[in-house]
Image (cartoon, rainbow, N blue to C red; front, side, top):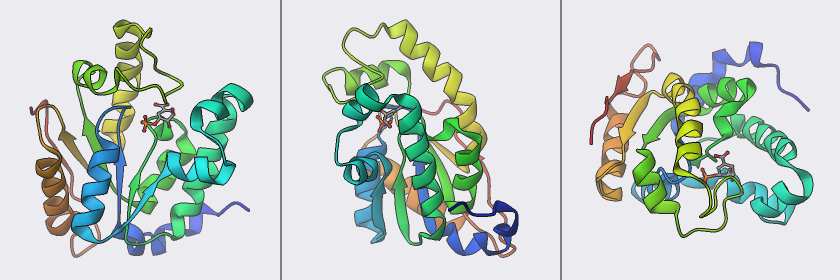
Length: 201
Ligand code: S3P
């Protein structure tokens, strides 16, 4: 079943109770979302984990057996189902923002936080991990960098707040997001405040 997005905006503010973390692989979404969930008491929803549970397999297996397009479709239906979610921290897969439909949906689901990280930080964090189909130890730094550059404008366009995670502790990042959410996220008229840290370290 698909939801008519045209009639949704009137009720969308009710859903600003959610905080959505977007960003590239290795940007810190998983660690920050756990800490944010503990700090806020909000329910943690990790979209990759949800898809793995629903499909009863790993993301890598899904890519290998059904292909990336299939995975992206699952991401879309999961994203759509989140329209009715409240009081949750949503940690998204790095490519969730690729589809225009997801971009529209995410804006309605919650306050969007972009966790920014340099390509060096990203490689440092994920170099020993084996669970990412779009990254292996053989992936050249250059191609990772190109993918990041391609996606960066999308992350930035969607973000209500951009937080650099380079050289920052999970606690610092989490507190920053929580403070922003409590003070600025939705003002009296329901407008979202915009704040971006430019190249902050
Ligand atoms: C992907 C990122 C992964 C996962 C899948 C695809 C991407 O999530 O959704 O492997 O396209 O960047 P993380 O960002 O949590 O690694």
